[in-house]
Length: 132
Ligand code: 9YT
Image 1 (spheres, rainbow, N blue to C red):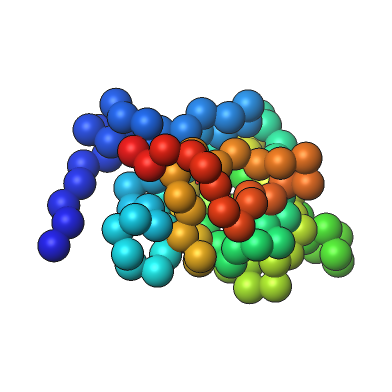
Image 2: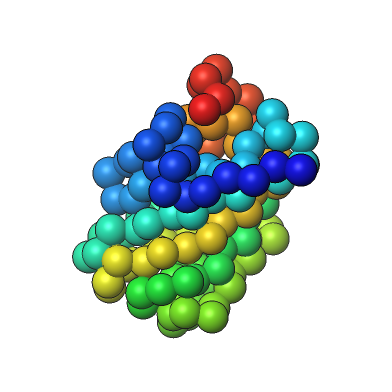
């Protein structure tokens, strides 16, 4: 059994800070669960284009509101507490955070630790990052 606390994890390398978001990765590849679990903050007023060609991701909105655009169709979806979006087709998407968004994110395969987006909005399949 593993027990971790967000406030403690935030003071370790599990907290990764990027330009438009930060994310605390509570569960990682070396935990051996087959997925990783993160609490992510998207900063208010930002727009982030992502396309996880190497991963599947599910994202549940805990707080805040914004908009999700499916780049393939142009379809837009409201993001608010209680909404989950599931990127089951490695979908290219844009997430607009109208307020600060707090999200719970699950990745399969699991992240290693310190990944940040490359120029295409993806994470690599393997990482040399140190696991926190
Ligand atoms: C919603 C989303 O994917 N934001 C980017 C950060 C990602 N959740 C992560 O690496 O934890």
